[in-house]
Image (cartoon, rainbow, N blue to C red; front, top):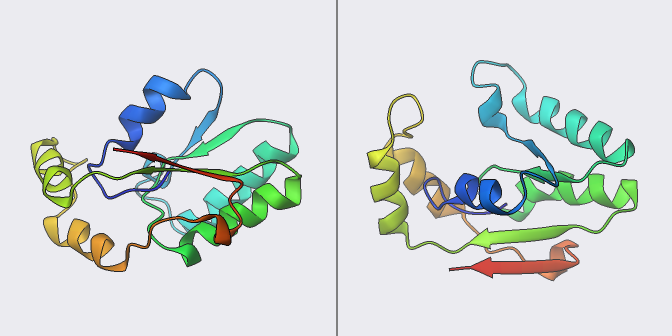
Length: 132
């Protein structure tokens, strides 16, 4: 999954992938240290076990998506990006409507937007789906 906080990624995952994929998200471990390392290890383990995985995080840049693409390639499975191309204003409004502690400070959404690069096949994805 790729998109700003409040873009609708978790809702999309719940509607389309929950029954067929294991959902992995750093949000599942809000107080854990080294969440990125933990996520990479879990994704690799699940893929090695033959499970389908969806990573429900913002994944805003190629550098942040690269370990996930590499894990899929190492497991010999296709890798797809689903980009929720939601207008930033709508993402900010949805985020603001969230209850604590799910709400991200607006500066966090804006920081993600500042480093956001749309996913592309050149990163190694077999497929990039854009949801508007």
